[in-house]
Length: 154
Ligand SMILES: [Zn+2]
Image (cartoon, rainbow, N blue to C red; front, side):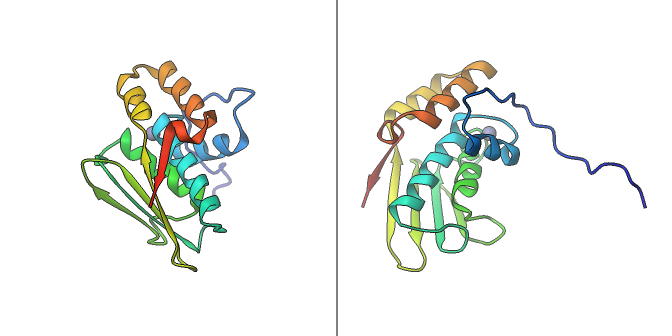
């Protein structure tokens, strides 16, 4: 048996003092800090709260949009981390579509809620370039009022 240390994936991220713990923890899964993952985290957090879910076992996520590849597909990791709905448990489902929609369902009550990303967010991510700008936008998305990022609709 080898006693070499277990190899861990290396993140491309330097924690800043006011990064919240949930963001730091999510980056451990995702590997870097980007606005799409941050958007998924915020929407996932809102879904748990809006549907009064515990997460992991009582929530299903259906995410659709032009998310064939990263960076937009990074939203999937944010949603998984924030809700505990995961690919492995078959509780998050991804569909390619022209516009973004995230539907969350409380699988205990059957109640669901849908979210759209705002034009302001979509415009901001379309303009960003370079590592520093990407991280700065992610930190903004992590903190800004939710209605600047996404809107609920029934
Ligand atoms: Zn990413």
